[in-house]
Length: 80
Image (cartoon, rainbow, N blue to C red; front, side, top):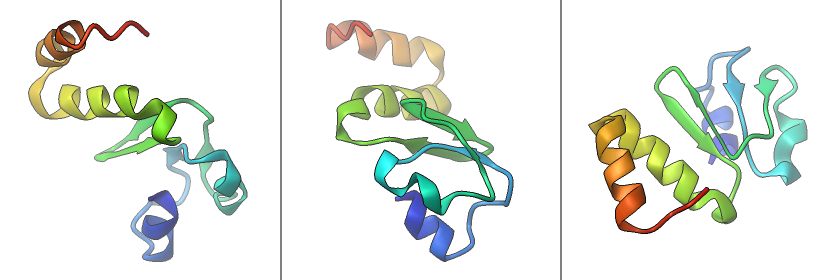
């Protein structure tokens, strides 16, 4: 997904981000971070399907707050 945003110039130059490792070389003008997910301003980036829970919980936290994210994390028995 970050490559699509990049093509349309929707990511400010210098922003911190992450992506699937196979496309990391496309983000030379950015602060690439290999973390499971990265939030930069109003964008949240993830690395791939294996990090979907972390990515999803980051979105829930941003939209509904930390308490809601923790409640869902506990409800689905997700242990990092």
